Length: 494
Image (cartoon, rainbow, N blue to C red; front, side, top):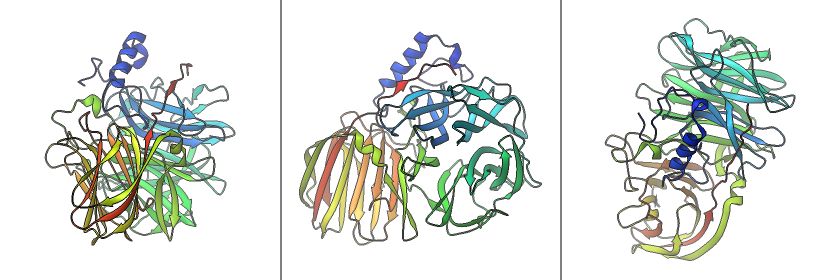
């Protein structure tokens, strides 16, 4: 039972009176950890992104939604639609578990635009499913009037010999005029894999082959796959899960042969070196740039933090570019629309920690330029109060950037990491930090490496502080307060 709710996890949102829904929305909105410029449903818990696209006029961002639990129980698909990715999105339930084959929940999947109609290919649970094949793969379409029409029969994705029937998270995409799908799968030996299919008809798919990579033993299941190309490279992305339910969201870059789906690739690289960034999906924006959005969730258990604070949210949208064969992630330019109250400061940091005045805030973007550096180590602290802060540290000799959340406020119980580090290919020159009510996202050297985490500081933690271990550094700070995203509810019936 969740601490915010009296309903059971199988309760249907359609059965709740309007007064109860309003009460739930008010309770979530009053939480000090409710995000402001990150997308979150009005109550309940966000799950896997399951449909991201730009249809030529509007952006669609949809994800699995658990109204009454954290990633468990009956689930829906919740969606936001906006003309510019950020400002004034409308929100609505996109897919309901009201069909014969999805009556126990909508799960992962993808969306594709064909002939000005949005098609959803998604996994779902049904009370009639067998244990060996717990997920159905279904097809729904949003027609020209905005109504959702579900196809009556599940899609039959053939599972090859040597694989269990537990396939899910269909990712549909087009390549050179042909349509393909990737499904998350598992071998009978418990190894995570992807299966590749092609089709002329979205309801009839033919198996091509399992995707062949060099990762023979790499997690028990590969969730939420995606594929795209960049600068002549094929990029295959997925979130690997192991038996301890630890997740690694990353990608392979190389060359994928579509006749047999064998891939020559380099090492698996993480999208985010922080904590809780999982299930990312990508799409092209109006300018043709590749954009990535993932889920930001908590890791571990918290002794004193109410569960209403721990519900996941979506990450900020990240624009992907490639430089010298390396993928960089930068905050999407649409986020600039949220800026106001710009403040700048220029000066030296030394071993006497300085509180930056009048710098403070709850929800902000902080850019730091390192103009001169004679320090052994520089540290930057945000969400500072008397006893708490979240710290980003740069070691000049090792070029290590460390995100330290160990004193950020409420932290997980033992055996959960609260510090993470990345090593840069060159000296740190620029940091861009986004801080919301309960998250931090750190972009190093214009997106060479990224670290994110959920954080839960006390409400009075608003300060910003800088200092060094020894020596001094000449720094330029630019801070913007960020408006929250004002979401408008779409009450039209689907």
